[in-house]
Length: 119
Length: 128
Image (cartoon, rainbow over all chains, first blue to last red; front, side):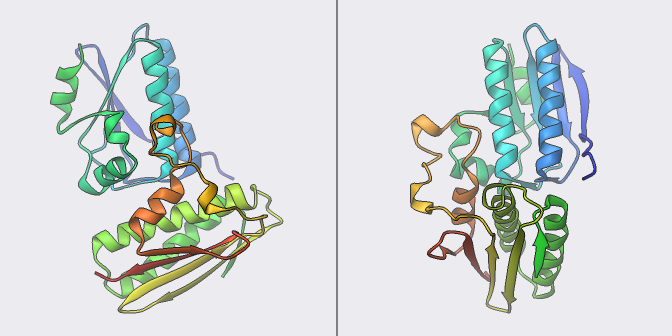
């Protein structure tokens, strides 16, 4: 099986790491695992991780991707960091609502709002 | 259709089934639901049913027309009892990283049922 390559862009804004997921579909278990590992490494390297994940390109997401986000959220919280999600499209928002994960994650309409919300 | 317990094969099959769905002009929301349910159903069959054993296969059937799309996904595993799967939205399970696939399937499809053994799922989506 070919090794999946993580696909996201990284930028820094006011000390916040902004991850913009590049793929439309965050479904593939192998890609999700690779993305999760790479993000976990970034979290581990930061003394106090501050991260925004931008979903503007994402139109499909599986339960495995939700699991990856939950694990990442736990790691960031354990390091006293902050995680925000933004630009989630309505269909994906529905997935968060059905699973009640909108109550766990802090979700913002825009990337600017998400970055500004981090202290 | 029969595939081995391989995620890449499952992905290719999913694409073929979605092309078939597209031929009947299903709306975007219906297509999203079908895509999500097929993904979760196939991953469950490979991961939990056949436990990634490539010697074991997944059998998939489909019937798509202008009214509804029906799929069955069967694995060679021991099966499971859907009612015994913990509710991922209960407070104590909310932060568990797994266990949401079945719930999403049920939420997005119109009818979801299992055979008695619990190793075959039948998914129905009515055309909007």
